[in-house]
Length: 287
Image (cartoon, rainbow, N blue to C red):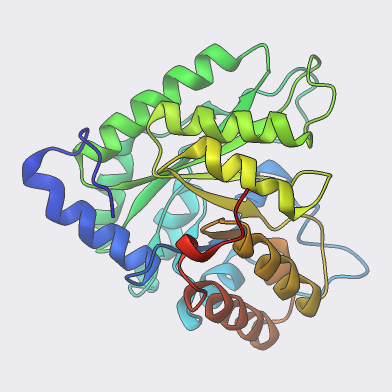
């Protein structure tokens, strides 16, 4: 594994341990996410086709605690209120946020600092392994997000924490956010900012074109968003296909938490087995 030069010598062992914890001593990562609690308000958690009770935030923490996911990413406020009850969870809190009600180009502004995350984890005796941040590339507020992301990465590495950037092409000038060349570009931009992992969406041309994003990201690992709701079987096949083109895992939310607890845990464990036991990326289908 690569330890970036932004990690000071006295924090190298801590960074190594946090990376190994999230990846289970592999080069892969299954990150379970529920940042939709802010991003989508209640849309992903309540409806006629969804199980009763999944809007309770504790549903998320129970899944993460009782499954083999590498880590859980929620906003820091939820982590502060529930995390100390679940000491076995590896946390990667989101430090930025916005809702889906904003009418203009998106700006997911930083609302907590890395120091805030460190304090919350220390006060609640929680395992903090990394932090996450979103950049909407192409938004009129891109400059602010790029600056915040770069600063967050530098500060996180100074604490020995792993960094994950959500890299999404968005804004009125972005004609097709699923264009494979655009997606490869934002993956490369995440590497330029110094991220350890970048989360991207699958191109509309299919998983084979993820090769270009993996290539553009270099030694920054590429994770793919779970996307729209799918059956567990479809989700496994989709992740397997993505891994075969060099990705390092997945960031999955609704395709796990939109199920009753027992079923959600089973889905998470099956995805974890698929990702963590996959062949090393050196064996992926090449260009």
